[in-house]
Length: 518
Image (tube, rainbow, N blue to C red; front, side, top):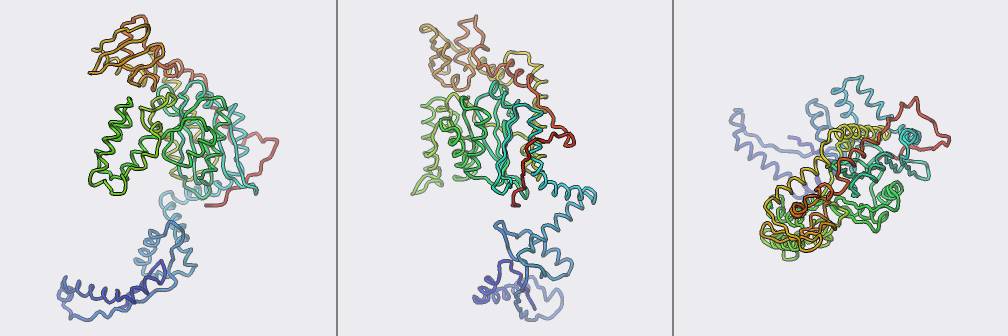
């Protein structure tokens, strides 16, 4: 019996198995298995020795690339098995997987889309490379139709594309005038032959809805690319703005933020830290995860350290405890002001995280020409402005619905609390077995919630009941008012980019070649 060995990693394993007698053991195991299932008796044939001869096949597909080709080889083997053809290939073995990938792609796309649609897909693939040469003209017309739009392109000495940056003028104006001065910085890997990374920044409006602030597209993700992206963001926002940043745990983003805004606050999203904790202690440890969130959500310093001590104690128990160190030892290296409410500065507005806009999730799933990516994002922002301007026109109260619901919860919570004036605007509130001090004029409460969120806490609202002439709305940060929300979206508009046949050609020609294929 001949047994043919197809090894995509070369002869090493074959020679090792042969010298160690693995093949002989394999033959005995097969023989024992056939006896166990009564193979010979069921077929009514005499038992014969297997006499296996193990033959190493030359010129078979070989692994190439850092991602491996195991799945591709499985498909190749199954195809040859059902067709009765040999697995050997005539082309270079190291290119066999790539050739088969291309053939599979054409078969799959052709069966799903049909020949006409398939030709369109192949045409788009060609257009992806050509779109880089059109990018300078495209951005020129984007700026022409949307005044004060900021764009930038970085290229190599040989005029090949490296990075680009885009921030719509109306979005920048909206952020500077009407939005919380806190920016989420993130990135997504891109599928494709040219671009590898999309950089983006997102901000929150007064109704806690995310709005895409700026994007960058690049051929690599490194410290230098982050520094370039953040410097371009600083160019369009200006030097005299006080702004804070949040992001996932990423040293490269930290480097970029500190390079452009060395004096600004930069915190982390607790969700990202919680995921890392779950990876370290196991996803079934609900106690550790729960204690982390209690530490993160604590407003007072005393409550925070109490919860943190419980978290550390839980991690010292079996099965997490190690004689060398705690599984979350790295948490001690992260400044607590970056992830816990008790130490959030006011610039963070008590925001733990900001959602990524849906359009970015769509773009990152497939490859598009670079001009199409920017156009899709521009169209998405345009629709957000139209939708939110329509919603703002139906606001009935002085606050946005999100903030109004927050205030109402505080009102309901404070009904049975007693507040008494100590002197001037300073009050003492008794409630929930605790005593809290409030200073109305300074908008400060010893519980820490008011000054961190910009929304009066239940203690402040209890004090207002003793001063019936004052409105709660006046104590809410003005960026949470419905007036500012209407100003944000009702006074601005994203203009559609004209068809390419109507593009204006700039006087100065910019030569831009596509980057090297990844």
